[in-house]
Length: 339
Ligand code: DAH
Image 1 (cartoon, rainbow, N blue to C red):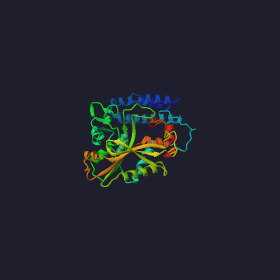
Image 2: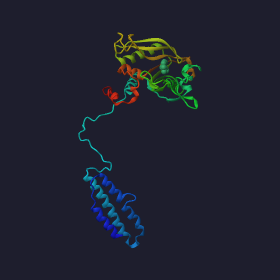
Image 3: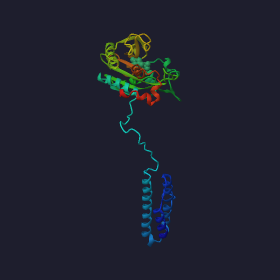
Image 4: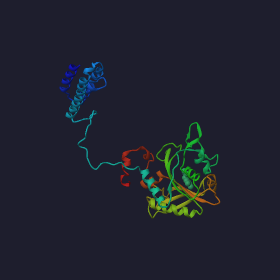
């Protein structure tokens, strides 16, 4: 046994290799699980007791020397990594390229920031929701078309579980747990069963706002939205409210802002009208307050909801909605300065 170890030690000392692959096969030959040195260790069991100490020490010495030798050989080839690592010495060292925030995150954060300054706090709810929070508690009639399979994604085998179609569901999630005053802003992803095109996607993002308290009026809503529009699009921005319908607000309105491109003169973006639609809003329907456990004789509220992609489009003129979810680095890099 001692003789065998001595011979192997001499063999190890003389090891040579021409490249990293050869070093790796030497490592496997001597040191892997089925390697020569490992099998010597297995034979150690049969060594007579009085020789065990000496033989043990010699095997250890051999093993350490083999490890050292392999590492020495690796160093000669300028790498101590068993995967050959190629260093591109022509690559520019500085500045280090940093990642950029996604344009939708930039716009979302800006919206949150504006409303935070007005005392709105952040609330969130689940994307996989039940019918109650998305529709019933928001005063949608049983036969409302939005409940149709054509608009809503259902979770198979659970007719009651759906992907939320709007962030208005978070209104209900908050009101069922909290009595007024409630002043929240709820950003999040929503889903609709739409064919994907440049102008529509099966998922997009919204921000919902809700304020419920004792003396809340339509004037308050209008003033908050005017301030928001001016912070977001510039201080000369004008707004206009057009009557509309939503099941969860009464009265309801849609808000337009003066065109961010032509400043109201009329251009291709605003289709000559000078106005761009940006959100839906209204006074919270008394039924919604009651359905969510709030006394509608004591409290009133306003709500609004807007699409983040829509606002981002108006700010950055992104022509194709799909750009927002394709993660093309060339597109994302365009927003470096806005970070
Ligand atoms: N949930 C509406 C939608 O997805 C947007 C909306 C309109 C939200 C009016 C509101 C509101 O809170 O008051 O189209």
